[in-house]
Image 1 (cartoon, rainbow, N blue to C red):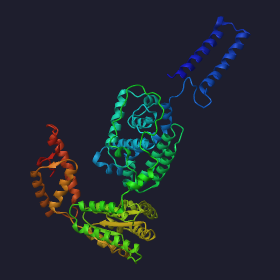
Image 2: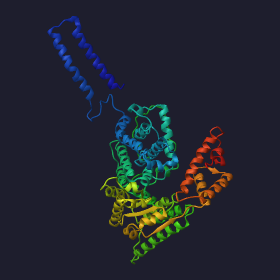
Image 3: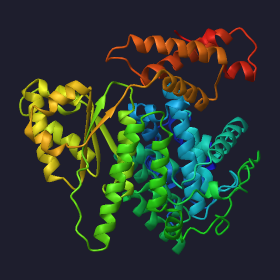
Image 4: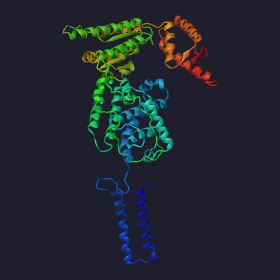
Length: 560
């Protein structure tokens, strides 16, 4: 119990005793006792009110019982921390997030824990950029980070839990901070960079709550320095910016000398906020300028991604051709020459699992790097994402999906399904109109089986006039599928035995001889790899878990 609460309780007890004595004393009811009883009865609530609201001239509780800086920091951080935790709980349940971080685990708990560490990384960076680098729990500015890590793991956290943590809680905090530093993420706001690739609106929401936290931290000592004002203004620009390549570098990443935080087991003491001990943050704009990649560097990155794909030689040549065409036309315009109108829309044909979505994503990046599109994000959908179940609702739903794809690429898989009824035709007409109205902000890629797509394109003259670039994605050969399996294994730190390679190669050759149009190609191989991992786990359950056993896949693990 706090001293102030003890004092209030003592006064209540004294008043109650006096009141009882006056009423019970020899059971005498005299005028004097009645008058004194009334005075005491009315004075009791007045005294309690005075004690409860007693403040000094600065509006803070009486100096004999002040709230510590850490406790005040807890109260101020409370709302921004709650918002960040609510956001993590929401995002960890979404399919987009779980697919993006699928390499970290399949359960919601695993994804949620990684998001915690990512946000912790960003909070540490923001704190350092504001001149409050985290060194230990002794500094009350660190209460926000500690508050976040604790409440994101435990329900019903109180102020006392945050202000006076247990030794066990401190060790947990130390481990989480160390994990955040070891992420080695290159960007100042790492989670924001990832969200930009997943969903622009998710990033906007996260940046808003992170700015809320930064504002609380900057004002924690009730003084805003010019550097803090500069950082907060720059942060506002990051909130609305869609260019993740302009993200300033992580302070944790740049400073390789960052030491593991020292956690003192002593009770935290009230300390003055320390300033100037971290990196200068007033030159955030300069950081953006120095870390931004040039278009040529970015383009080389997309080109490298394209070249790294297994097979697809014809597809790679087509993408290179359109890239070269755009670059040359832009060079002509720069020299004052006439340019030839270029259509950026494509039709991708081929069976499932042949890399259509992957190449569409790379093409979207190339369009962004060449300045064709501002964002270059890819929005995937099929008939279900465009067609509604009621008359008059399809156009609304289609327009909504197109709005989501503006300044990026709309990728419609199995697009031929739109020609099956009047609802689908309404979606097509809406799409064609928007392609004309937003021709400078929208690129559309239609994808599906080869024969079905050829018939589909003949159903509407508008489709034929707007889509004149076709790329066919052939099925993978047995050797290419084997290479895909090997690459999947290597990416997840597995090795495959020579016997497995031989057995898998034979299996794939036999499989391709009897395949039909529904054969999954790379998708089949990915599923096969995942099943093989499960078989290996079952095989090793009762064996020695050495590193060699944990990484080697044998013929016994092949799920065929």
